[in-house]
Image (cartoon, rainbow, N blue to C red):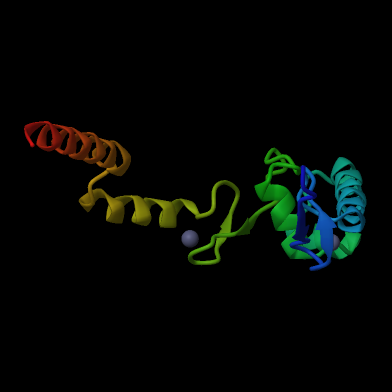
Length: 136
Ligand SMILES: [Zn+2]
Ligand SMILES: [Zn+2]
């Protein structure tokens, strides 16, 4: 069994791969940051992402990661993060409601089921190969 190593996505040092995909120092830091946030939220459940970042010293980007990954519950209604498309505040998914709608509409023109189609093609080509070999 080989040792799996990777670059830590947060600090860039090489570390032994683990379930969290973070090096130990970053992982520990993340836990303490998260606990800090949870403490604050317990006292002020209506705090916004920006205010929470200011009082805890945890960067907004890190807060966004917590919210997106579900570590900070979406029941805190003022914890929002920017939509990946237009930057307006959102609380679920990668896009705000209006962008999600726009993307959904735009995607309607394309064939929706790509994977099953490809499977059919593969099946047909092996069948063709098989029959042609038999004929020779
Ligand atoms: Zn790290
Ligand atoms: Zn948007």
